[in-house]
Image (cartoon, rainbow, N blue to C red; front, side, top):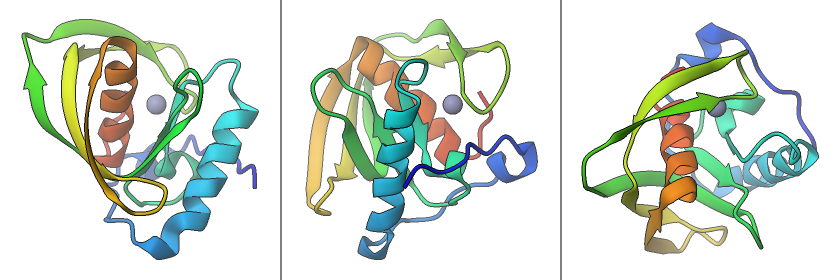
Length: 137
Ligand SMILES: [Zn+2]
């Protein structure tokens, strides 16, 4: 189900909590909402649809990736400054990002995965994990 995008800074500033298999419906809604905004949105976190759960979706070329409880367990190299936009705010903001990250997460079936992502996909994941931590980018 496509949900409305939250722009409330107070809600977006709160830290999300761990997702459980009961939250798969939220994951699906997040995917549906991302698809509805695919022309100008490359990723979303659950708090952007009003759910304070650690769930993110990434519009990877091919198939979107859904991650429950993602955690960056390793970064490589020195960070760079990126200019990022977000559906939940107007304008762009600067953020420090790593070119390469290793992420531990649970996939759509709640199976544990560890994967390395680089460049643009890595940047989107870092942005969405910031959302889960209540950081406004
Ligand atoms: Zn955002």
